Image (spheres, rainbow, N blue to C red):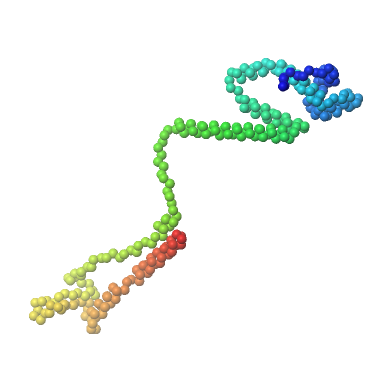
Length: 277
């Protein structure tokens, strides 16, 4: 069981028999040096030391007793400030988290500057300070999210039409692009019957023979040509054969265009087949 009251000094205590000035000097020495160094200095013979043989446990007890008395004295000196701080805390919320962080930072700086501080304590204090910083960042992020949520809630409702996403398939697009187009079919024009009354040069006109003639045969027709008379026989027959040859053979340009269209369509089909595979 531990209490705040300091232990009673033994009657045979060597350190308790020192003067007040010597006790203050020893306490100041223990504040800055390790117990083993203070023990070595006390046990040194005069004139290097007082020649007092004490144990480390005795030094620890002496330091604890003097530290408690020193803290009590400081508390009494700053009692007015403590009361003002307590009144302020009771009047409103106090930033305990900020105060604790500042104390930890101050403690870390003190340990880092002390030559006898251990590495484990420095690592623990640094880890604790990093955790506090992470909590600060998380709190800031949460506050920003709350602000954005409140701003969206207060904003007027604006109906925005959202179009559904367009599902594009590269194969279907290429298939549509490479689908062979239908060959244009030549428009069929109605056959125009030549006007028997109007003839052009080089045109052959046929009309039935006058049936009122006594020697007329109804199966015969009369052939007239507007061209000048050709002394060579069978000119009308040769012209008709040439016209038939021209009608039977298509134009070379049209045939080349059809062949080019077929080649392009075949190329498109081969590309589409390779992509789909």
